Image 1: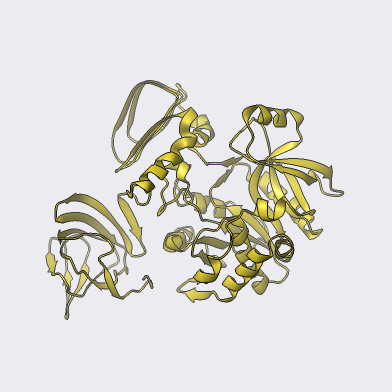
Image 2: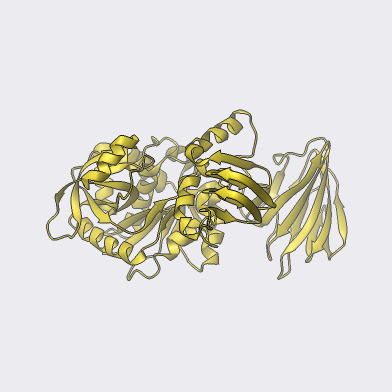
Length: 474
């Protein structure tokens, strides 16, 4: 029976702000290595014998970033399934299951969030093999992480009776929500509880059977949303109206806490859920300096102990500090005590309420054709640095309220302005008047970089009227 990894790459990771944001969330960031969390999740599977191509589920707004990151590691997915809106894990897994049942009626699904760290890959492979044995028997199997410390940020699983003929595999007795510290200490002392990893392995058909039993409405809406899905370039886009009718619910609440066929594999695999800055600090403590500081970037630290300091774009100096989280980005800086990092999401809520955008975008905004970065802004003007990948092209568009000046810094630009098409080289420039159709392309083999100066009464990104777009954006 074939095992298909189902990679859940949705979510925004608000507790890792200001690095993780809506448009570039933590699973698409290089947090612990030079590769992103998504890339690490997929690459750690490549040596498992007989594993099929991964099916990736992500938000529609992240589709081009996901596709590009897979291309960078030379992985061709079975498909990339697009959610019109995040509806939690039960619907996401259901749509993946319906997809796989159409592709392979006997498919097994290995459900993996894209933002976890697993250090002991051989032990992980062994756990997958044991979970597959349980899945063959009809169990919905989860991976229970050996609870070494009393963590209050994780859910827990209490094991029940051992399952015959499968080593370290048990019936699930109970799922428990995040406990207080005293309760967590009790859980660890009894040796009967595991951290709930959010990873699963089961037959696609069995999951759908149980979902129909306990959440028939979710099963029906997901089946209809997949039935009416359509191709969008290299993506499979679920029907927006039908999918949004799904109740947002986790697989734990919808199925695992209700089924009588839940099993847990004891998994000592070096697993970490990087859900907060303190979790990232603890994971990287082995690489800390002599004062137990985890430092990344251009940093000077004197009389600093037990702190995580991360500088993304500027020099950061710290003096006489203890147990702090300091994260610098081009447009925001976080300073917090490690004991308060779970409250970072309050900052995101405040930004949302005040209609700011520091929780949405970084200064550098990625697009399927490349990226742009804001350099300066003022009354009636804005300056950006654009980078266009070889072969990339912006949409044929116009603006009602702004004119644009383009100056080529490196590479060659093909410019469409009204009926005119021209090539610009380094140090050459052009002017795009208000209301004129225009397009920017990179016909070369190296990246095109240019400076864009916008001027006008309104400079918002929503002042774009697209007439043609290679990437089929609205």
